[in-house]
Image (cartoon, rainbow, N blue to C red; front, side, top):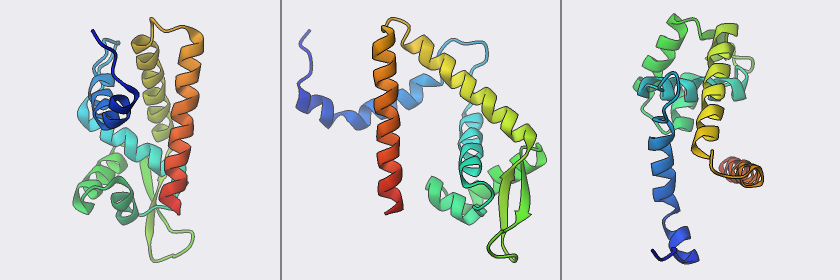
Length: 150
């Protein structure tokens, strides 16, 4: 089988990201990640990063989702005790979301699950390959974050 050219690799990076998203959540670990959990965990991670500064509207914009969908997801997280609604630190009329200690625990478990999935998927890689991939992925995410804020 012919190896793809450098140009083919770059041309199909979007396809690779899509496949990664679909397959990483279906590795054979103790607990499979359900689809709603993926969205919930993404919301929790964004709330953690914002440290109580994002409203539901801002979360919807950041996630590229409909406000009503994010509002339902946030309400579910509130009722599960994972996030709490708080008055905005910058505008007392606005409500933002902040993680609870239970939300932090759920997020930590999700991150542990992701680490285990990474270890499973890359089990045939050597340690240097794993670390290089992790470094480059973090660099990619940092670059994407900088570009989004400009």
